[in-house]
Image 1 (cartoon, one colour):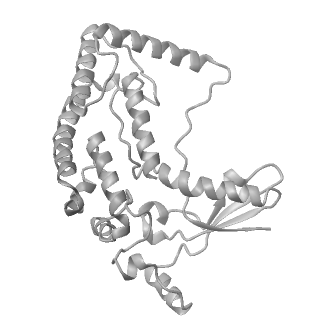
Image 2 (image 1 turned 120 degrees about the horizontal axis):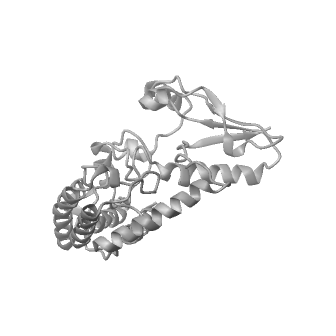
Image 3 (image 1 turned 180 degrees about the vertical axis):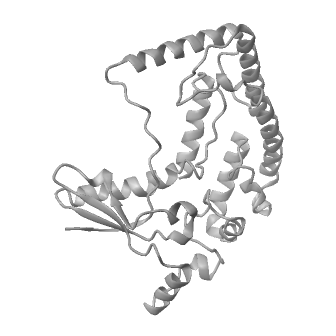
Length: 291
């Protein structure tokens, strides 16, 4: 997952450099953009099932429970599983314990004679997911950081915070979870990144709303004064974050907006043009059966 976040940051810097986005985009997953779940759980599971049972109907059983979140409280007991439903094959997701409480889950585990994961019994976590999850509470992040096996990845993730100037969880910096694990040089980098983040946000707040992109495209052409403002924003953000960017003059910004607006018009008029698809829905860990 860390490699995915690092690659995402590299790609987002390139997009910003090329003025394919107006604001610098964070490297991390977010609660509303959980590509970590879809890419590293759902997609892999669905791909494996498709290879194993190409001609079978499939029931994919999950451990989703209504008590876990507001979104999950509204989920159906069963629903079609689109990625594995093709002509002649029907597949569904079955949330078999959706009505269970967390106490019922632990009671069932104990009754079955099963041992809890050491994250619960040794480190005191309230839930088990990735070592450092974008959905984790502060206490669970601290629990993860108390495990020596997680220290190296902790420092690497903090390095990405420092490089990108984006905190791991919105306004919560992973660096603050276990600062005792950071070498002095990295701690100093984090301090600079926090100051740079405040400055970056203040600079980008100057951008008029109508010049922001929608679904990856500009919707309006800037005036010459607005183009000069955008160029100034880009120069200052680049200096603050420590990246190199193009389109740092008003003339270059105007030219780039004209290019993108023309491309957008061409894409919209294409007979094969499709509406922008929403982000893939997150899929929980599953057990699956073919029949």
